[in-house]
Image 1 (tube, rainbow, N blue to C red):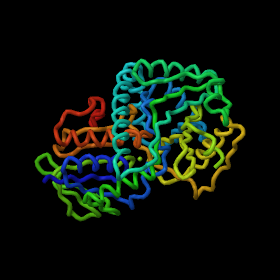
Image 2: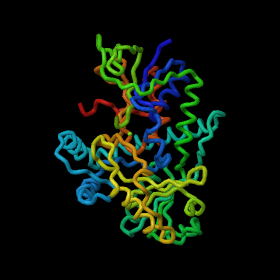
Image 3: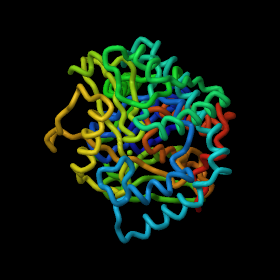
Image 4: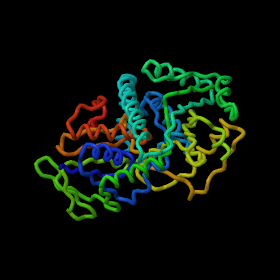
Length: 394
């Protein structure tokens, strides 16, 4: 039986292992850390076919420049002299045009809908109970300008087969009759879902362990042995000890009152803040993105930007800024064009990449895992992966 090694125990690596195990492979997962601090432990838990527009859009260039000078902004590029940032920015600029966005939207729709379908299937399995709920998603717009822009997005969504309903203030207040958000209007995406990601990741690990998956924690990959266009062995902690048939790299960036009242997961549009009611009477506030390289620094200005935005939309429910040690953060792997990297590489015959999902890792994880299995088995992919080729920027 062929054996497969996956580098990375985040949601993408675990999902890939899930489908590869179902396909009959022996799988080993290698993780440089303890496996308890991936992005999907603390994210908003949203599975969002509504997010079919990539990050790289023409309007984002103007917003990004304006937001660069405000460290509390929802999308922050940390100014620094760094060639990788300059290179990434140039690719982002080239990708941010209408032609490429129009091509990307159907691709993102298809992989998101596939992921939602797979989540629905997983949620029915006896080993899983991760508070999967199909309540939809409310996009709350504070200003009339943003409301009009989101209404245009809703029109595109409906044309793409993603149901979206534009709501006036009175219609919104009929739905959110206790909270009554102070906004200009909203768009409701009824097909979006959410879950408790902490539970999902924990149950996915337990399932894989029960199936015999081997986890190597605190094992940093420090080198490769290559022969005849194939990666034959890995150096782990500087020792050449691990061999395999096929390698998958899924390493990401290395990626109480209100709880009772808010009935539907929401995104505060202008602030780019997600609010998700979770299991165990928890509510999770998350959002903002900083292009700042790989670092472990918590920027409290970013936290203040999240906290300050909530009472602007919900005046009756102010929240306090948490202590720094209670703030969770995660590293988000962002491609310049806003599309993930999924596919087999041309340089190495037995290497598949599954990364670059930015803030959509949890949402796209099952679909990515399924695609990884299909790629390795040389099956026809469930969705077209042409735009996701990992070497498109080589």
